[in-house]
Length: 187
Image (tube, rainbow, N blue to C red; front, side, top):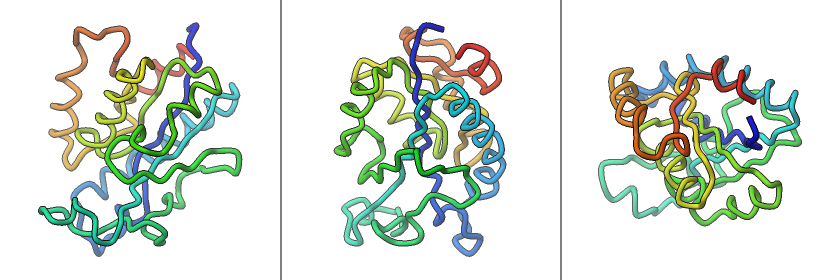
């Protein structure tokens, strides 16, 4: 691979892992933590950046005027990266106010300054923030890979259906869906 990748881990915050919140994504998100940690280890071995970008909403956020309940409030414990992920001091943590990690947090400049050419996107939820981040990576002229076994949605069916839409797409090879093992073999 001639690309220089960055790993973008999306929305793996404490609020999504609290059993009392009864989010259907919680048990599925727990399953991907060990695989994400393995991917983090591979990125660190090769000195590629690991970036956590997580929801950090205002208490009175516009998004909460719909069906979405308040969660991941900026500055709260619930908006912190889940403790089970292998986050190190050298990793970047960029709280974000909207779905895409490219929205209003300076990610593009950070990636350009490090000469990143490809964004490997992992985390939750596949059909919202993971997809929005991958699409925005393309819109900012970075290649993108959604790492399918390092991301999930509110159901396994929803996750699979979303990714199946993009496994064969006209943006290939600029935008791909791959499992972590295949991705690691390329980097």
